Length: 183
Image 1 (tube, rainbow, N blue to C red):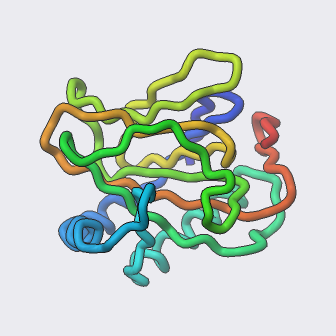
Image 2: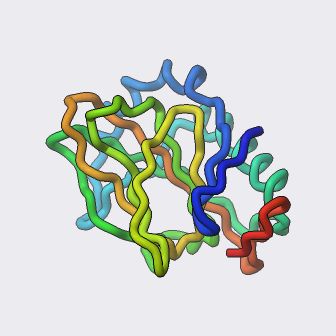
């Protein structure tokens, strides 16, 4: 399992799930496009139990391997976000007081790679540093504290991007086992 430390607040890991999820691509897009979203909400809850049951153990295994943290206090629904060059929301936000279960750690991953010139990067606002742009890749997962401001950037291509988001709930700090980063 590969670990990349983009900053003390933003980590990247191998998360090889795209081969399994790709067969659900059309279903995920259709579900996203037909599910009503409350005002100012851009994600929907992932309702496909097969996908949830596949992703969750892999996510929790990764957390336990890389972080010194107790078992989660609560299980969080996986959220789904879909964007293209016309339908997107590019607003800095965090996952503090978002009306959902309060997470301690936020995780996000994408179902496909970005092309060099299509935009759509993940922008992170690191405290006391200039924002960084991450060109997301399939089979990678990005973890950061729930308070970190982030946003998907607009894209120039017609490609549909599928993003999964979820979190880990605990009242204890996350301490990375190799870097010592504490959130």
